[in-house]
Amino acid sequence: MQENAAAAGRLLPSRSMSTSTQTSTASARSTVSSHRPGVTQAWSLTLIPTTREAPNDAEVPSHVLLHRAGFIRQVGAGIYDYLPLAWRTLNKISDIVREEMSGADAAEMLMPALEPFELFNGTKRHETYGDNLFRVTDRKGRLNALAPTHEEVITQLMLGCVSSYKQLPLTLYQIQTKFRDEARPRAGLLRCREFIMKDAYSFHMNVEGPGGLNEAYDKMYTAYSNIFKRCGLDFTAVEAESGPIGGSASHEFMVNCASGEDTVLKCPVSGYAANVEKCEIGARPKGTLTEAPSGELTEVHTPNLPGIEEVGKFMKVKPDRMLKTVVFAVPGESGRWIVAVVRGDHEVNEGKVKALAGVGAVELAPVDAAKKAGFAVGYVSPRVVNTVPGVLMLIDADASLGGFWASGADKADHHVKHFNWRREVGAALDDKSKVIVGDVRNAVEGDPSPRAEGAKLVTGRGIEVGHIFKLGTKYSDAMGFAILDEKQGKRSVIMGCYGVGVSRAMAAAVEQNHDENGILWPAAIAPYHVLITIMKPEDAGHRKAAGDLAKALNAEGIDVLIDDRDERAGVKFKDADLTGIPVRLTVGDKALEAGGVEFKLRKDVAGKGEVVAMGQVLPRALAALNA
Ligand code: ATP
Ligand code: MG
Image 1 (cartoon, rainbow, N blue to C red):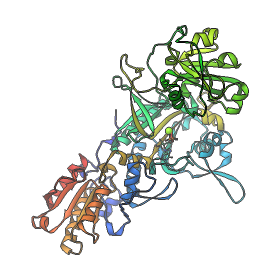
Image 2 (cartoon, rainbow, N blue to C red; image 1 turned 180 degrees about the vertical axis):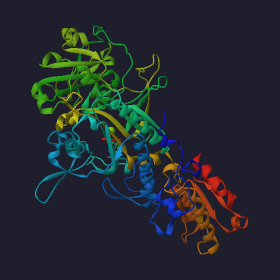
Image 3 (cartoon, rainbow, N blue to C red; image 1 turned 45 degrees about the vertical axis):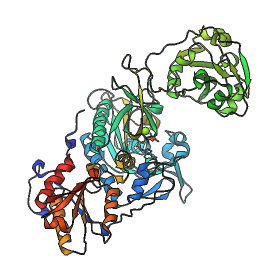
Image 4 (cartoon, helix red, strand yellow; image 1 turned 90 degrees about the vertical axis):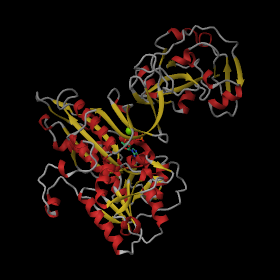
């Protein structure tokens, strides 16, 4: 992957690479210089409330460790304080994001978090967001929302400022707090109700060609790859479902991590990777739907069994020999039903249902309406294609094979054994307007790869830290944002949108970089690069040695935290492990007598420190941090 110039992979700017004229005065340097000096912070003068106690509800390491290391404190469900260490890391991530956004020709701005509800009139996004949207009524009784993202706000802004193709393309972004009333805020910063996001929006007259959406999207893809690489994250860019836009491209950037909520599938041969909503499956054998019955159709009474698992156990049938029949409605088309049939151990994939049925949207059939239409909800069998009018049945390839099948019995509390496609469904199977066999399920481990013959998909878990979308004209159409093109005609503006979960990325970094003693920050986003622990803070010689070292390190852009607390050495070292600053220097009598300090890396915490001469500390630290 090609990298932006800004992302040359260097952690710290070095004087030799600086393009501005170097001067020796600090004041000149702080006015105009590409060289940013590091900072020094005394531990005693900041707030780092380390603790042994993990939060009661903690489910994942990042939640435990960010709390224990004094980075975050919970204010309410899914609402957190970012303490000084966290704020420094968040700013470092934001700085990387800014450099890469610049590299992708995006300009920074800031929009309000509070948005008048009328902005949703055109897009109706308050309906799509549903309860996730925070609603705020003001003193005049007017409804506002706390923004979950800013498509409407920015489209409105552009509507007022841009009237001609000559003003495009344009990409704008902000780093800002977002609000979503998540049903289940969990896992500390990974899923919050208030969180920090970078959101960018691009505007174009064309999809293809110079200045078009595809060009901006590719630049963003590169920028995102650079951002997560520079943050020290191990990630996979996966093809993703593009949501309500349909057809357009979308990629998610997933931090590879067992505690991730998202399932990712990869083909080890072709490199194809997709999230489970999007993942295609390679060619699979289909049944002929003429296979002979395995036995006589037998009804079984199965009361009070909540799921397929329980029904299977009760009937002594494995889930992979059961047919799961899911009924969908087509929004806005009452009386039209799409019934998807998959094996009991598989999951129906809504996106694939839509694609195979050739409809723009589906929703799980509302129970009342489905019952009224004649579906025995919870006990539906494929026979409904003959008994309920308006049904299109989609059979997943694996469910279309012959052999023994158990299925619902189309009456409450009953299932059947020895279901046979031909005997039970008959001629409808040959009517292409009623029955289609294809792919309507989520891919699973071991499925054939869609991109390399003979290869099998493998699954992994991921944390979504970024998402890029080709929006097309969804928002501009909904909000009437059309401008003059080269031929003086009016055309809807084509848009893209691009999000990074800044606060989630910090937590994801901890998920990937920790041990039993604490965090191991990747150097580029560590709150400080070097921790100097003073063994005897009351000793002026110790304090001076620490101060001198810090100054020398700062001059080369290294950020230093000095643990000057009057605490036992054991406490300080435990806190050093917890907070995870990559390079550790200890100022003590023995090392000072030998003309140096003890030098240790957080990642080698089990090993013994080594005494390094004062003059060697800077090159050693730089080498470790830039490694
Ligand atoms: P998810 O699927 O995890 O709910 P999303 O797809 O709804 O996220 P987007 O609308 O794509 O999220 O938002 C862009 C980025 O913002 C996401 O890639 C993610 O990193 C981050 N993000 C979204 N929701 C949250 C949240 N509740 N807490 C923290 N970060 C979030
Ligand atoms: Mg997303």
